[in-house]
Length: 329
Image (cartoon, helix red, strand yellow):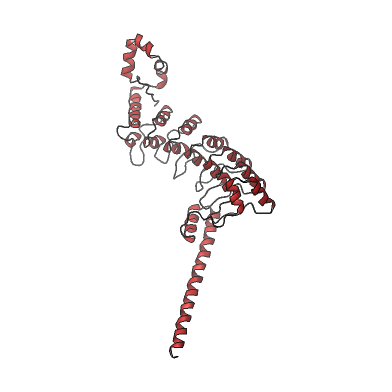
């Protein structure tokens, strides 16, 4: 019996300590949640995402609070979505990571669902903790129809640097039509994002030939990439010779060096087709040969060359035979 009070004393201390620890942990989570909201409002998405991951155990996307409206939008079930809206479901419900039903509809490319949500007051420029907007998601899915609808309802085509860039995402995935729509809506064609570079740099990095060609045609700066790295540096690291030819045809500077002091030729894989193309372009620049100066001759049929041996020898000396493209300065 003598041990009774001591036992109960320790038990009470243990319970008190456990309750205090639980309350302290809960208090910290509430504080972090408020801090996350503060960073979201201020636009610091990286810090908000980092804190959110600490709160929810490092899970990058938590769908525990997805509503039926989210599900309908994600699956493109227009009738179910309209029924839920008619029943009074809030179209701006978001998940823990601030993902809305409009985000889901655009990511799935479901333009009818996206339009229905917008017509019922969905926030067109809503931002997730990772900085993604509905327009970014539409560019991710490659839905030009969704891009057009969002822009009609006032979506911002170009955001601050700290938010995910729709045009960079469109280019990265090779969605040229989405890219062209954004450019037609006054997006800066040379908009540089610190982690990604310019749209042309991204197109060269991911070897999106159609996007490279269109960006150059629309006047993108051929030497503006990611800080000191040019689009030609990005192309040299890859294996697509066509991208090299496009850039050099538009006057890419072969001598430009990046932060490591390397030129595009230094970055090309040894004995690769890219290295050969860059060497050919360098040689042609030293000789002062332009593609425009030999365009007529290079299109001559083989039978014509056979009748003009001296012209044939000239072509061999100039390094034109074999269909190699020449480069501008």
